[in-house]
Image (cartoon, rainbow, N blue to C red; front, side, top):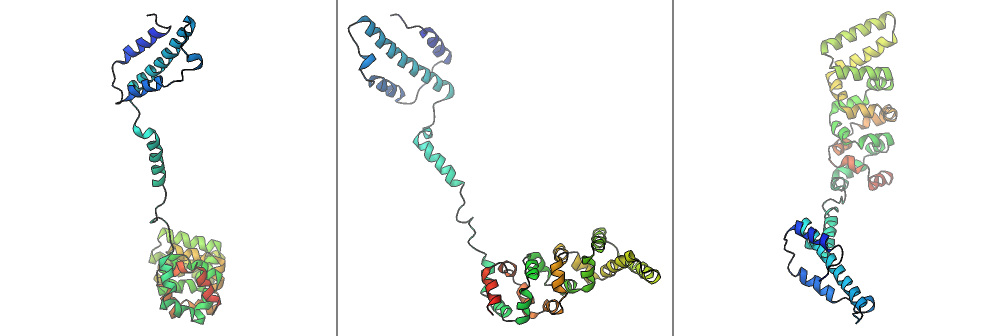
Length: 287
């Protein structure tokens, strides 16, 4: 039997690959597909020698393709079942697994909701002084920081926020920088006292502006309670805002920081979060 051209190369390739067992039923399926090819047109077997030769070429071509596929599978391994329809399902499962679960979805701030339904909030919203304080936009913005509201549970922090001397320091860029530098360096009590004395002498001699600023900073830091309050970043951040300092310059608003209803409210974990709620704002305006 005469083999078509190129058959020797195919046999050499198969010899190099060696023996490999295909999946069960693979050969049967390949041969079944070969047998089910249409028998019309160019594939029709005729009595002519040319037609017979053409049919042989078709069969050899199919067989060659099947052999090459078998050789590739033998080298690279047979594809897993999931590469078919089940593979698509597997990809869908992977995509689904990447989605957020119901546990990851934030359904609401339960702490804020609990605060809005508490007796503490009811007392707060019924107190005119506390409502006046919370109606100030700058105060509201500062109190939305939970670090600040937590710090304000200390009477010393509330005193620092109300202090006119502290406010003047933060209103002056040079004095504020001096304060920051002193806090960063951790000035000792003795050094603070020396600075106060030097600044006082300077004030008495020539009323030097720089000496006054240094003296004010040293005086504030010589007070342990004020120094501790100003060491809190959230406190300094609030005092750095001109609008907040302006609010604290109003005696009525400053006094409200010690309002009993307000102090009780800021001790609640849900207070800061509740400030951002629309129902909180509505409660302030509807009273």
